[in-house]
Amino acid sequence: MSKRISNLLAAIVITLVSIGILFSLFKKEHRKRVRTDFYSQSVSSIIESIYYYKDDFGSGIATHIKGFDVPFCFKGRNRTLDILYYDTAKEGDSIIKKSNSDSFYVKRNDSIFVFQITECQSR
Image (cartoon, rainbow, N blue to C red; front, side, top):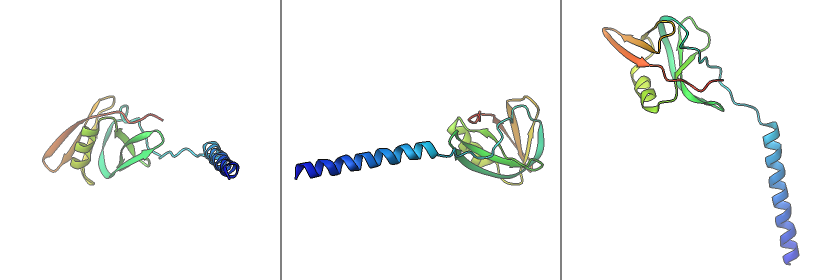
């Protein structure tokens, strides 16, 4: 009886190890299409959408800006600042940033909010 149990356990372990090896060999990278070169960009446009994203390289907040096909990620390392930005910036707000500046402005009506760029995970 103990020989039968040990053979069964060995077969289960071999099966699990084999499945693990196969998953690691054929795993696809999960990568979102998000730009992280916001620091060098000069932007004066409208925010179309803001959403959290996560992929194999990290997470952050993707901001789709009018006039750009691919959304930008410029918030991603500091969770407190991310929450502040996500809760403040809304669709339809203006976003203003000068080239090579580490800060940007979100303008809604007469209110202006200043944010610091926090690096997203690089690709």
